[in-house]
Length: 516
Image (cartoon, rainbow, N blue to C red; front, top):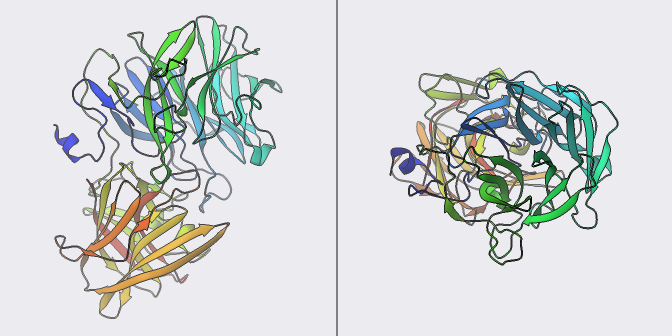
């Protein structure tokens, strides 16, 4: 076992020519994938978190590195504050004309596009392809004759339309739509809640891969036609069946140099988010069958353990980053803010991350704090430990460790005379109302404090603290983490002032360790 395997909290590569699902046990929702030569790139939804629209790279479809984000911030009205459930929805990635293209929608503003010659480098500024409410999950397609198209779905909450897919002619440079579009499929009767379309062409057929049935109880539908506008035949090719992999759908197909086909998709694991799975694909009568047809009904079921894809070589274990010693010049790619970041929130240097206790001018709840710095749950079981030194300056200064979702809990340090006060606070967001209650508190001496949360497979979180880094003391009872608005729960760190006071308080974080 390699050093990286020993240190990682989830490794899909079993080291024996096989892999286990999920290939990424983290909330990379609505994944799409593209192959360019020997390289594979994956993008995922990021909603209102910043930086946004993550880009991951792999050489074998099993071992993935997080290499970049398409956007540093979402420069649209309102995104300097948390916009739970809004932002970047269901992107598509394609390689065309020597560059990479990413299209995505925001549910209230429209469809956007960005390009790059190197996915790990600088992406072009966002270009708005169409201004619209409720046009979601866009996917571009360039046909063999040079014509370009874009297919998308609808969010009923904004557009008043559901279950349907619409296809537009698009300028070949991806900058604008050329017509009013045509409805190419209505899934109301057989495939309700159809969304997330991905368009391909193979053996003279146009294909639209589209999930239906809803996130948790749904399935993967394939549409095909000899004409890009249809009519389209439909077939269910992947469902939960007798497995425990709910809603196996919404993803992307890729074909290898070896001729193999594979499909990446997500499974909604509640607090752990929408984790990424990899399924083998075989073709029969020009229909893809995903996973394994264990029941003989012609519909695939997700695999748990399977042989690795034939990419002609073996590659070392790679996983998205988690732990951070804050020794770099930039924040690790695992970190995202709750909203567009401000330069005065933090400072890196001298082997630590300094978070300033900036005021919450729009409320006193962490649920509405844009300066929370968090990362995804990376495994079904793990422990996160933050080593911090707190230097309060004003009344209301708080700093600590947070587990975040619609229900959230955090350990918060505050001044208490010559000592610190460490409180466990539990909060809930329900129907636009946020409530927080302090469960318990203890006094701790000034100096370094180690804040810890251990998360188990049932999503129970147990908080503890230490003043020496060796002996930990439990604080409060178990807390059950919950998903956020379209996202899994997150874990991270913060410094805020809850009394709307401007001061010079801060917390230095020396290390954030994620362990088994």
